[in-house]
Image (cartoon, rainbow, N blue to C red; front, side, top):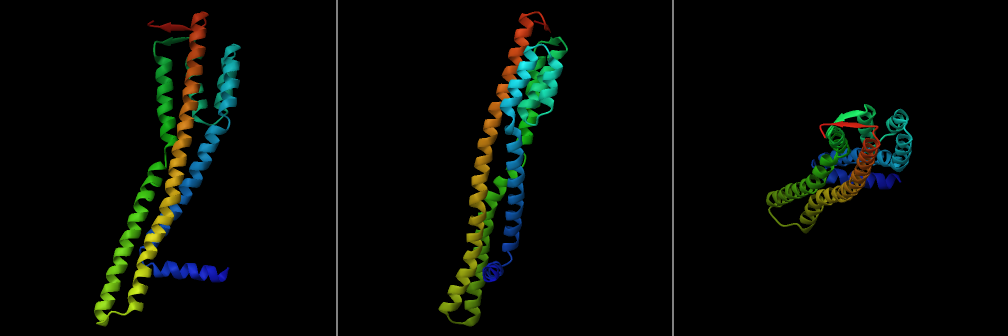
Length: 221
């Protein structure tokens, strides 16, 4: 174990100064990915349950209970239910008011879900470039050493190339899992958008049914 750690530190040292920003990028990406994975898991965990329970309570006539159920659960779908049901509870709404409230909350929730993705995309793009830059710098230093020595030493050339390529390998090792994580999170967010659309549709269905039964008055229609 100690030998592996020593070898890792040796490789890090041999990579030169560019290894430090690469290490910083890896730590930032790891933190963002852990936080984003937890956030998206919580947002989706109880979506189906809250949609069914809140709709059942609302259709039974207990809008307060439906709002309380939705407000007690995290996630964008629950937030949309709360916004729409609160408007419905007024028993009188202006035309388009419910749709506008749902749209506003949906935009806010989507912005929250996408938070951090820019950081991951930036690291996935920049890390390989940092690695290539480190390689170029390493090659320049290697040829400078050859020039100073006055002759082409195969050991000197091979050592310089090895050190130069370490940063490229490190940049790719960072960028590949970050890019995979980014695409995974985008897929999860797409599923949460579908959850939001289901929540919005349930609110609108409840509003239309209550308007048809005379329990809700839409002003301006």
